[in-house]
Image (tube, rainbow, N blue to C red; front, side, top):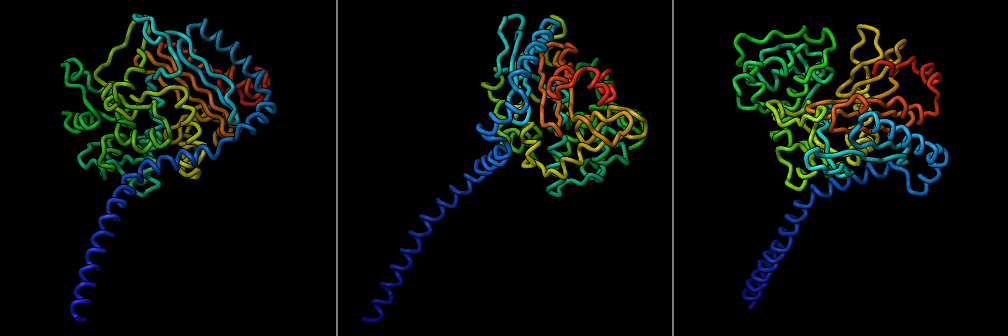
Length: 418
């Protein structure tokens, strides 16, 4: 009788264990599948926690005289439109949205108007995103700033160039935009980043570098095309997919993309670039990313500013290192950090007044301008090549309440030749 009960109890125990495992494992699987969305939500939550509440925004708006500034910026914007600007603008100060507007056409043939959903090719503003992606991997210990290119691409023919050199445009590499005219004439298959690197590796004779590594600053798209390829190698993911999964979506930038993997609904928001009335179509270099090729709108670029300021995406200490001038051989008010252009004091280049990046490519001209000290951002995106997209000085004067004379005295005419 005792043996029977023991066997019966063991049998019931085994059934109980099987039922328990059946319940637990699907639950664990579900929890595992939910990890990514929760991480994305936690990053957005972290970023949003650094922004002022609606109540605080009202208080700040009074402090900064927001209504008056909005009127002044609108007056400037209408003048800019009359001077040929075709695009969108957004200005925020201390978490208060001061101004947002869009004027012009997204396509001259169809006469479709621009709106706030319109996405513009960011051109070289893309370098900011590539730089931050690299810094993320630096923070995780997967890349070191003093790593040479050969650690990731052993056959790369130019030696002594570090990741830090690439980020700060001090590599001396030849610029790919001007290095493969024979390929262009031959109507070669448009390369991606891997294909471009292979062209450099197999070039015979080897293309002469522009300078020795770390000898001088030389702005060059090759640097960021190589960095994008390094990101692919380290993460074992296509660059476009990595940027979507680790940068755009976690920050909440749902309208920002690289077009090779963008869904049809996003591609429909893409506007056409123009030089004058000439429509710019896709060309041989449009499949190379990292130096350009990202699309976004003003609302998403504001989210990007919030992400940078928050310290949630990359630690504040590491991001601050990207704002240190890396080219101090010759006195200049223009400098470069890691992925960011810097406006420095012409008499003291260690003092950074502004952090920014502009860009132009295939008819698109844009500006992303930040002042961390006074907490403002100016975003100008245009699909018509026009220098008015870079005209931020009048807006800065409005935000800082400075006359032209006061501005020049304070910043030593820092923007006179922008």
